[in-house]
Image (cartoon, rainbow, N blue to C red; front, side, top):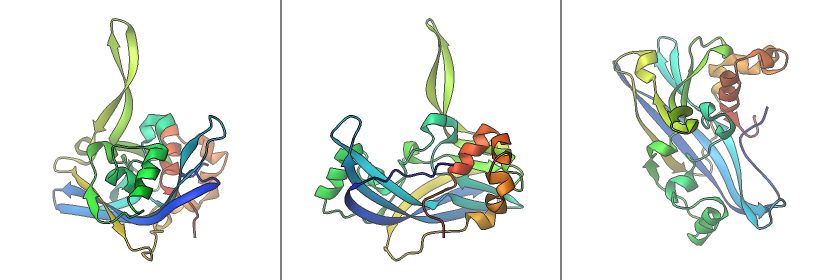
Length: 236
């Protein structure tokens, strides 16, 4: 299974740790979850097309929000319903602080700024990773995306075509009074421990009967993609 992150030989621009915090409104008040991650930014040579490409390596895990009564929401590290575009990284610091650039230009903008990323900000809607839940927490096949970006189809004079859409099924799945309040990113000191808790929340992540074939191949596609977006990088 692929982990999120693309590392290569090249120039490191900077290494940063940040906390992603998710707030969910519920009928009994706001529930909060957070995760500290580390990202390495750099540039490397593009051997296919020449020139430079952004080199990004993420180490961390999804944000688990305990809603009580055995229910939860998880801000995964991308968008499972985009399938080929699932591994989206726009929730990370460079995109939050430099949203008007991307790729190697963004890395050079970061370098020109003195390589400093500090402070925090609420994420814009287009930067928020998808929210998923396992409707039966002990069953890895029960993944459902309840908020985020997806691919839909529309019909026009030229026939059907695909386009990106935004879904919000939180209230439909969890009930009235449940909603995403906000997602916030804060840069934290470099000695802040990276969060390593997701396996405790979902013990089947350590079960080879689930994570290896033939069990893995039997899971629904959305479950496999969501599981791949639960963690990234080197596990302790």
